[in-house]
Length: 233
Image (cartoon, rainbow, N blue to C red):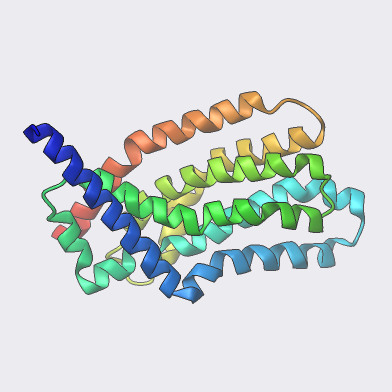
């Protein structure tokens, strides 16, 4: 085996180790695990109480409501993306790893997305039904949430790294990340709304895929730089 092949195998093992560790820790912290989903459910349940139980009106507002609730739910979980590792020193060991830092950060972001964004997308048909959204449009909400939430996790990791050394940095994190989340929210909710109207959502999905590709190419490196800056202080 050549040195380059050995490096790739070693990096793959490190990636899988970080991913496995993150998932195990998140499933052990059940309160953090259930937090985004519980917040998402509460918003969906309480919204009809304030608006009124009119099925047609609820169905019209459902795509935007589901997307805003999902965005806020993911925002609540962002502060813990690096916080626990920062507090116990694990993050410093990760940054001192001989492997490239960006792939290891992708593993942490992937774990965050699986237990937050992907979980919300997985349960979104249930909440879509609660809001009276026709079952033919459930898939559009689920797909856009799954695709868009991955971008949200990647972009949010940059803000989470920048605010890591700030006490009570949740408010600052929200101020930093919400403007960057707005395009994803617009295209995601717009695609689900078009599906409700029976129109094609292929152009919106293509744009969301492009945003995800850009975020995947840039965000891990920006997050690594932000973490190095934070740890050097």
